[in-house]
Structures are given as structure tokens and as C-alpha cells.
Image 1 (cartoon, helix red, strand yellow):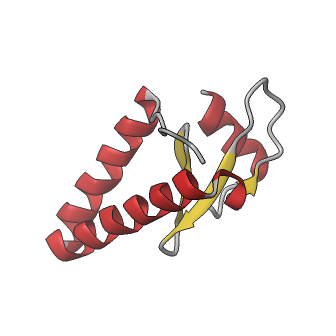
Image 2 (cartoon, rainbow, N blue to C red; image 1 turned 90 degrees about the vertical axis):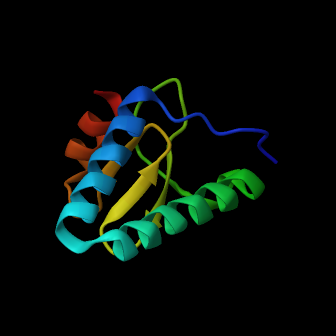
Length: 95
């Protein structure tokens, strides 16, 4: 069991941007639902760290992803759109 999950600065900024977009375009209800779904994913990863999809990213770190809603993935280090090509996901995660 994990003791904590650290959101990197990039992930916090991306999360805030997504929340701002959802609030502007769809309102508070949709934004709250997204936040709740992210919290659920984080809680699941805390209990079962290996439950996420193992990302094929060459790095000294292991990256796992969980689907949040229909379009976004929580990648601990970043938020990435699931429709992206895997090479572009790597760029989002690694900067």
C-alpha cells in the first residue's frame, strides 16, 4: 500500500487547467464530478498501486495511468488525453 501520492507541479497545473475549462464550458456540476472521479482514482492507486496501466515510458521511474471519465488519464506525473499517440503521452509526462 502506498503512503502518499505526489502530484508534480506540471500535473497540478494541468489539473487546474482542466478544472477551469470544465467550469467555464460545462459548469460546477461537471467540474465536481471530474474532481470526484480523480479523487476516486487516487484512492484506488493508494490502495492498489499496481492497478493502473503500466505506461511504456523509458525512465528510471515507473508510470501508471488510470482512466478518469471518458477522456482524461491520471498519470501521477501529468494529465494526458487518452486519444493521444503514445509518443505524445511520453512528451506530456516527461516534459
